[in-house]
Amino acid sequence: MTAIAKLLVLYTGGTIGMQMTTEGLAPGSGFEARLRAQQALEDPAGLPPWVFQELLPPLDSANMSQSHWLQMAALIRAAVDEQRCDAVLVLHGTDTLAYSAAALSFLLLGLPAPVVLTGSMQPAGAPGSDAWSNLFGAMRALHDGLKTGVHLFFDGALMHGARVTKLRSDAFDAFTVLRRRREGEIAGALLAALDYRQPRQAVNLAVLPLFPGIRASHVRALLASGVRGLLLECYGSGTGPSGDADLLAALREAHADGVVLAAISQCPQGHVEFGVYAAGSQLRDAGLISAGGMTREAALGKLFTLLGAGLGQAEARRWLALDLCGEMAER
Ligand code: ASP
Image (cartoon, rainbow, N blue to C red; front, side, top):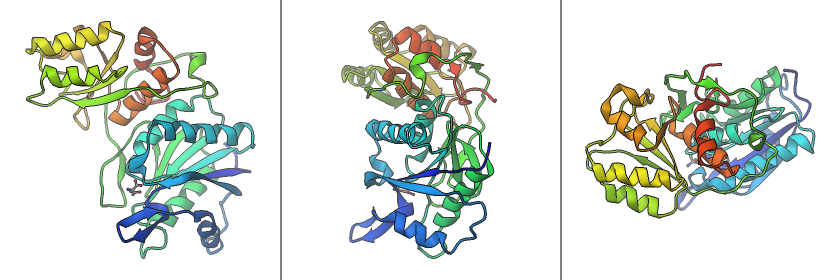
């Protein structure tokens, strides 16, 4: 945890660098010059030297996809391993910031440098905007010394990248770490395939919240689209419509077909414990695996990383249940 000698600022778009168009705010390029001009007005204390890179084209983060996660991970890897950067700051739209923070937490396991993501609720330059305070606050946090891993810096707070959630769409304190139970078993030595230098590929994944009225035909239609991992957002402590034999059969068939079926709680502060209710045990018996107290963002990013690394169903289930970076256990 030493001062940063060379920081990569990776600009991906988002409100922070947006400009007004006839259709509303849209991502703009040329952020490096604006950042340098603003930095000249800032107190230089605690600001590390930096180099700048853009993901092109810059995005409204509503358009982020798995390929962008992989692109960001590759740029970060190259910056650290080849360009000798000792930290990375990612500027990102807030809408899917928590998803990217989670995905990068798993894609970059073992990276020997800290990564911080930030963005803002108001564009840089707008009166009273949170952009510069978030950006320079994140730089200073990095320069002060952070442990390796992925973090989110927002509205003065430093948060764990694999635990955050966007809670508000209209306030500066938009992100939080919800109190979900984190008591998973901590993984020992990491599987070689999960090291940040290993190749990854896109995976057909889906997230489905259970709701009163869900039908087996809904689940079957989703599974027929070829998903290899399905994240089910169950009720409470991991229950679902266990009285629907057809729905349970659809899950059992998918499990037998090699699909990884993972369960989280749709309660903002919930966790899965199948055995509490028979309606949960029956989901487990149909092939669901508990993702404990993971958020949707964390569970999706982890499923993506495990299956994208080429793990088979049994291995993916084993590693999904272990804490890899603090997503399931306090560390
Ligand atoms: N729609 C914007 C984005 O996610 C919102 C923001 O950055 O605050 O890119």
